[in-house]
Amino acid sequence: MKRFVYMFLAIILAATLTACGSSSANSEGGGGDSKGKVAVGGKDFTEQQILSKITSIYLKENGFDVEEASNMGSAVVRSALENGQIDVYWEYTGTGLVVYQKQEVETDPDAAYEKVKENDKENGITWLNKANFNNTYAILMKKDTAEKMGVKTISDLAKMVNDDPDKLKFASNAEFYAREDGVKGLQKLYGFKFPSKSVVKMDSGLLYNALKDGQVDVSVGFATDGRIKGFDLVILEDDQQFFPAYNGVPVVRQEVAEKSPEISELMNKLAGLLDNETMMSLNYSVDVEHKDITEVSRNWLEEQGLVK
Image (tube, rainbow, N blue to C red):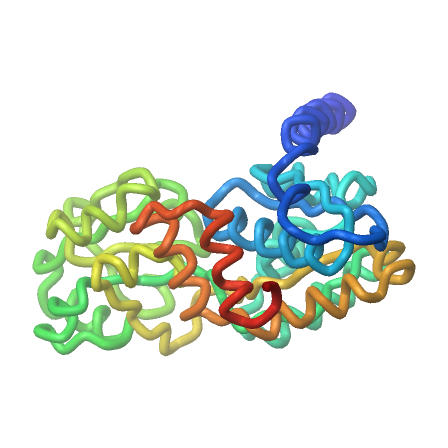
């Protein structure tokens, strides 16, 4: 069974690499003698597509011959890195620790980073500098509603639910609602429970609009999603630190890091410039303003003085 799964992943990856090998990164500026080839990977959602494009343009402008392999699932992109089919991509500490390394959830960003970084040394994978954006789960409300109700933290929300269980409607995707590290664990830690009739389950992509349109009062979401800014939503403070840390980190094959140390230097420079506000703004430009990812990525690099 495992052999079949690996073969299936390899087929998907090969198709992805073939489709993306002549991507726009190869024509994004640059010039002169190449410093070598580098394959940049990425996952299949907006934030990852932006990070992949920023990385590709930046490395190309700094003299590397870049090949893009984006729009992959987590399992495929990780396998590609391990097998040497890609050289660098952006990963999240929580995903690395729990999904790939089968470790316990860690809520402290620094602790999660140090653990996942140390554990992956034996796999020949180097975790570079941790960026200051944490795309973890978040509990959201409309800003005006939260202010009117005086709700700033999840503890405030818990008290309101306990005082009047039928007052609020809560939206969640089915997976988060069922998981122990999702709604069940959240309610257990904070000591409250939404009545089943007050919970509306829907696809993740619909959650933000449901909240914006007043179909629900509270929703789960992701902390760096651009629609939080676009729809005037607010993240309730996780004052008891329930949600795991999912900081973005550029990861590179150790062999590549040793052979081309400049790649690590450049990626660490990028990591130092990215925080929650920046990622939310970039995601907003693509998801809400419907701007082109390449345009958004290059404009940001130019604003930072990283490319001309």
